[in-house]
Image (cartoon, rainbow, N blue to C red; front, side):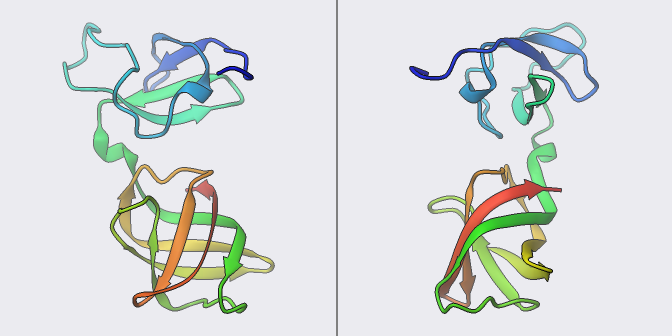
Length: 151
C-alpha cells in the first residue's frame, strides 16, 4: 500500500451489475470473503460475497455469492518450474498442493512444447495465478512452480 497507488474501480457481479466501488484491485485476493463492503443489495440474498476474479484490463473486481463458483478444475498453467530431480514427470497421476496445509489434489502434468500445465482431476477452491503449486509423486516432493493461468 505504501508504494502502489490506489486505482478505484467498480465491484460487479458475474452479470456485470455494479454493486459498489473498490479502492484498488491489489487490496483483494481470489476467494476473499471479508472486507469487500458490498452487503445489503436489493434483489440479492444476505449470503456473503466472494471475490471470483480481478479484471485487470477493465479495473473491475468480480464477485459472487456462489462459493461453488470458486472451485477450479481443468487446466492450470505453470511457469518458473523447479524439478527437484531435474527431469519432469509428465502424463502420470500426481498430487499438487496450492496452499500451506492445504489438501493434496490429484493432477496430471501435461507438456505442450516448452510449457507445462496441470490437468486437475478434482476441484479445488480459489486456485489463483501467482500462487505456488507444490508437486508430489506419492509422498515425495518432486518440484513446484508458479500458477500462470487457470481455465
